[in-house]
Length: 81
Picture (cartoon, rainbow, N blue to C red):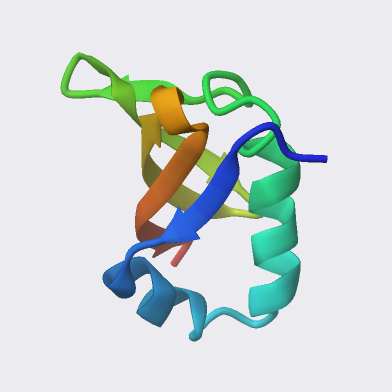
């Protein structure tokens, strides 16, 4: 079960629709980043601890953590070429 709710910004939602298995990818993000958004080999972006990126199922996921409301918002997906 995820500790954090996972939301996708409109641009990320559009990119999600282009993946081979959108529902499988959503589940992988919830299972990994939703359980621990600071873990899973994630790194901060621009020196901001709440702006992060990690690789999930061969896709770079950029996201923002809202720790106060236990939500992460995926803002960009960058599939491997």
